[in-house]
Image 1 (tube, rainbow, N blue to C red):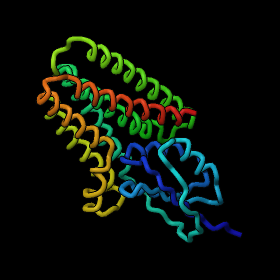
Image 2 (image 1 turned 180 degrees about the vertical axis):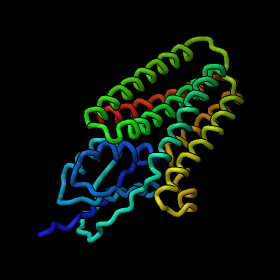
Image 3 (image 1 turned 60 degrees about the vertical axis):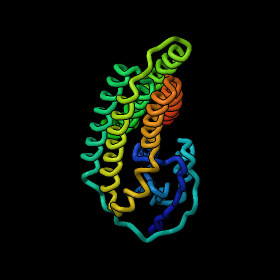
Image 4 (image 1 turned 90 degrees about the vertical axis):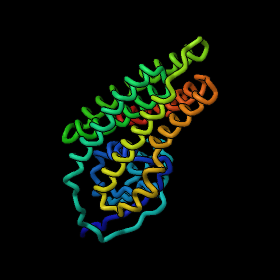
Length: 268
């Protein structure tokens, strides 16, 4: 007697961009009952096709602390799933884009004395880690994947703590104003880069492109951060103060540390 497949739908309120999708994929990797994962990032929904009533799936999703909750489970007759052969190639592309902008933002952030750009560069690096773990651990053992996740998580936390210390030093010291024009120009370029990454990845999911453009790009945390740095640059010039830059830098460092803890959860 053959067991019917189940379809479980989860709402994941903090699934804003493809890096969260990759975190979920890595977390669920190794659960043999899972046959397919269907992500709907614009609507923050995940549909899991699996055998049996596997409580481990729900437990693993909740452990990531992305606001995941089960909406429904029902039987389904669907058995054929289309594998996306381009997925690995696309992950390499977005990994390259994120890593290049990590270098650009870190370099221009240090030169222009902007902690907002430095912090945003670490956010780009965090996304690179997620895509990199996905790629380098493909076909590897679960132990290898956990080891890479642990190294990436602790490295990210270390960089963010160094950033916090520098923010405090600049907050209480007499520091030269950051170059607001560099902040704005580089952040606009990073905004475009994030939009391209989201577009590339979502295009591979066979979703309607217009729907993706309208509801997807503007819900991403990365894009909100880019806009935050742009606004901080405008305020630096308007108020003749480095405080807006330090505030946005602090906020982004917190986001980076939260992302690091999610990566560390994959190592357990």
